[in-house]
Length: 230
Ligand code: SAM
Image (cartoon, rainbow, N blue to C red; front, side, top):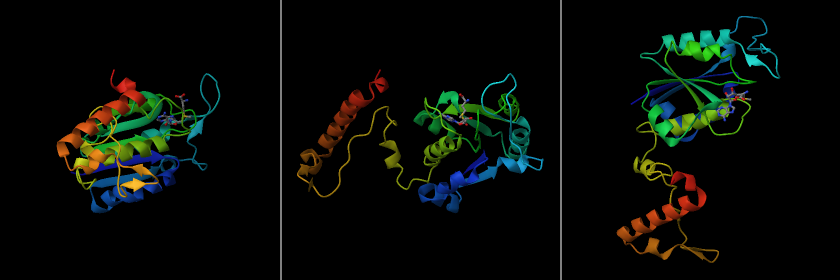
């Protein structure tokens, strides 16, 4: 198992954090081939321009289609199959654990990070001639650019690549994997600042512990995220 991810951004150094921890190690061991590209590599003018004023008027600037077209051509041509091309967008489908699971099965992902008011709409249409195109939102709020969204998605997807997380069981027990929030966790000491760990966890009765944890999951989900039960 091995996944290729190309990220295109005008701020490549945002992604320096992805050299750390589990994804950093996955890159070193070859499980994840993650490359970050500067969109300005695909500009041809002296000022390396990536944006221009919007047709029809309105506030802000729009990312020009030409550098995006050249970037996508180059990255898609070097793909062994057809890449999945993802544009983070507050106007896209909302990213969930199910989306992460689905995208973790792909061999090659290309992420295009928007800035300003976003990217010229024709880029999304053109990209569909090169591969599967997905517009994906991190949630119902607006960020300044796609970088933070792409980091979040890369981390959620990357940890599902077999071998990236040491113990695969820790993936199964997590929040959202079974449609419920995770149960509360405790470690030593058994009493801390007058607060005791729930005695059942010290009982050694694995069946009772499993039942208690499931109950806690339901209780939490009901209280914090009733929408998940509906
Ligand atoms: N004018 C756009 C709109 O209203 O849909 C918002 C543009 S936003 C300021 C600039 C870029 O940030 C977007 O092109 C996208 O890449 C990214 N972005 C902003 N909010 C996001 C979200 N909730 N999820 C994913 N990407 C987001």
